[in-house]
Image 1 (cartoon, rainbow, N blue to C red):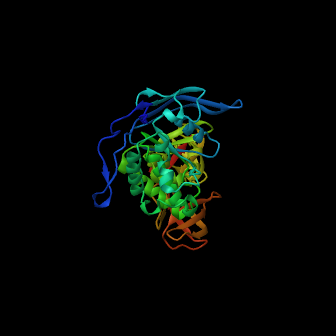
Image 2: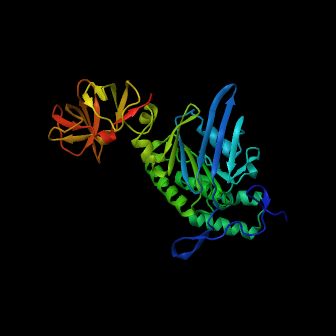
Image 3: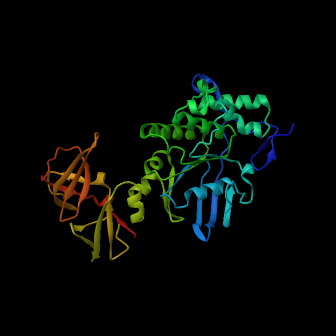
Length: 375
């Protein structure tokens, strides 16, 4: 019998990984999967003379959960397909664990992809869907059975093994797609917006499950999405893309709290934008003089502050304070959105304080949360 392929096309006749993780009760689930560093260097790609990726370079550390976040058409899915080998870059290199795999076909790369549509075979049951890749690679029957059983147990699908895709919910189909990818024990798992078709409640649950799974496996996950809440929930680091370029990267807190540009500030959550000019080291704004976190690199530009960072005060703040009138209140269940009108500029803040329309309040815009943006 032909030996199964693993990693960079090398035949494997011995166990692929050492160690294991356990499910509740001590039952064996899956071996600890190998993980690897992913480096993209100078990736360029065009379709019909339109450049969709423009000199993209990034590094994903071994065992890291990274999200490539951006609007539709920014090139994020094309970048993921290049890592998977489903597209070839016009220029640049894809390097996994120090080895250039740019020219390797998809079936020779140690990666697996979970697609937005899940791509399950409707005529196969859950166990057969999960086993499909192993059977195609001619793994021994006993090894295939063991891996499928372990993958189903890890993703809580033991009771669904004989169901067909049409008999599953969206969340169950998503878990089957994950099991089918993980059973091949890839070094890198690629996720192409796999939660976009789920309803809001289920999506939030699956996001948490996915993050916990990645931490248990300690392997490299790369997710592409346009959902900023999803990126914030699951990621160790976020790469924000716009028009084929990486425009900012960092931890969720770094990217959210310190956006580098107006695009990032507006795309990742909600923000208040305040036009400003600098004069003798002071920012002049329609709200009066304001002190930002750092000195702006411009003479005229925009300051940004997140709604939840604005404080409602009963007294006048020592710095960065303004008097405002409440113009709108929106009840959100766990908080209230408060819109105010100071000097013609509408701000939004979150507060648990009881307020009334027309009420005048003091607001504080803390300097540590007031960011000068680069257009």
